[in-house]
Image 1 (cartoon, one colour):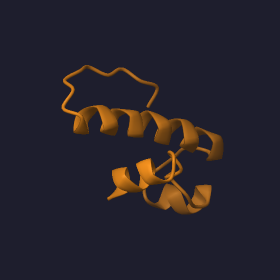
Image 2: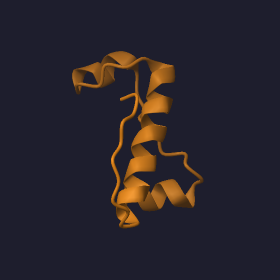
Image 3: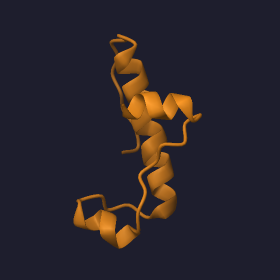
Length: 60
């Protein structure tokens, strides 16, 4: 469902919430870093769901 939402709305699905609330769930990145993290995450998800086999070495 998340991948469908991301495609329907042009890549606008992001990790949202205050830095403090997200830290309670184990996500310890600041506001701007969350956008970079989500972009990296969704690029991996899209490649995996397309059936691509690959190695990934990213920032996160």
